[in-house]
Image 1 (cartoon, rainbow, N blue to C red):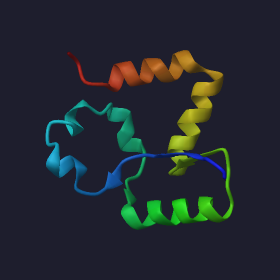
Image 2: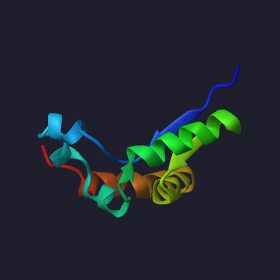
Image 3: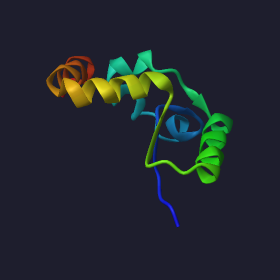
Amino acid sequence: VHSCHVVFGKIDNEYFVNNPDTEEHVPKIAKTIRTLTSEECANVIADVAVRPRKEVLRPGMLRFYYWCYRFTPSLVLWLIRKTGSQR
């Protein structure tokens, strides 16, 4: 038995339709990450089932931000704070 941590960016599905106030709280920097379709996510999960990996991040820009966070966490946290919703 294998386990894998799969992280997707925004997915084009009913979530934001059913939770209308949620999208306005997503940091603006998320607009630089393209929206995935449900089919693309399903293909990633099917691929991981065939070739297990410890962690998968999609799309590529999300992976880029993840690696930036690994090496310069303060920069990424600052971007999220600056582009996030103000309370």
